[in-house]
Amino acid sequence: MRKISPYKLTCLLVSIIVLIWSCKKLDLTIPAPVPADPYAATKLAFGTNIDYSNLSNYANQTKPNYINNDNTTTNAITDAKATLGRVLFYDKNLSLNNTISCASCHKQAFAFSDTALVSAGVNGGLTVRHSMRLINARFANEAKFFWNERAANLETQTTMPIQDHAELGFSGVEGRPGIDSLLKKLSRVNYYKEIFKTVYGDTIVSEARLQETLAQFVRSIQSFDSKYDAGRGLVNNDNAPFPNFTATENAGKNLFLTPPNFNGNATRITGGAGCNGCHRAPEFDIDPNSRNNGIVGIIGSSAIETNNTRAPSLRDLVKADGTVNTKMMHTGQFATLEGVIGHYNNIPTITANNNLDNRLRVDGIGNRLNLTTTEIEQLVAFIKTLGGANVYVDKKWSNPFLVQ
Image: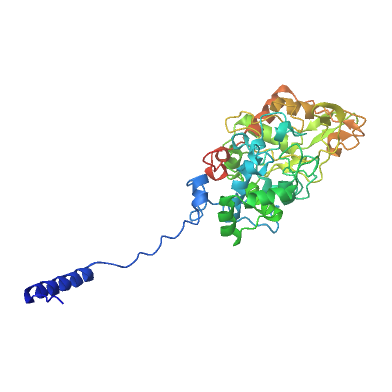
């Protein structure tokens, strides 16, 4: 065996000592793995538009102290669930062929209605009635929804268009899948896995959860920044003159609030227009006891229907600048406020309409208000004060998707 010289042995020992000392200076700790981002898919789809560490305020929005109606019942708004509702509202995945969302028929730019006479659904389908505005739905005394009140509440309403054959298409008829197919579809979407896990603690997608969150988002859409609200905040009641109103606007308000007096021929002889009898201030929602308003047409048909008794709030019928958002009535047959007032100025007597509201007739004859040109101008001026501005631009009600 070959011997190592004392010199080489010394050099070897020195080298080993240096190596050991050097290793002690090095950090040989294996770094901990970087945890996966629990919102990776959410960020990919929405960027910073949906941020569950910094949610928009849906639950604690302020409202005027003179607003009393509230149909929320047990489904109280939370920021987390309303945010999920916002995503669902704008998601085209809710339609059979990924082309239509709730927002396709309810556009923020037009007070969550549609400028089209009827709204487009999947595969060429069309809605039967004009799209209803979704302003202040929470503050309606009438809890039922749709023009003909076929939904008992907003929660039930939210998934009915999804299951409508012509609208979002998950009808379960004519070879199409039902809503269970949609629920399975959404459960496979990565951002829903993340958001449902955050909101509910699991990734289960159910119809009840769609209804709960969509209803919360819709109820969160509120508008209380109109000229009317500015004036109402300065007085004790609606009957007092509003200091910020013009003489024409105050006169229109009085006409709106004051009931008319008719003679035996259903012709107004004194009083106002009586609009407040059905569209009650300050919410301007529809009286739940209202019946048909004399509009009995069906879009694209010569037949009639008399069961359309609901209406949206008159708020944001027009924008703050006075321009009309959309066509009006369930038939969309009026494009101007003057046209609407003209209808109520001379209610048609239609023999087949056995559901005409009693406030619109005397002894079976449709009312004739005989409003003057000046009175019509005054009413128009007042209704224009009900339009706000924020609802059209507030980001929390906007489309959160980066690309769609």
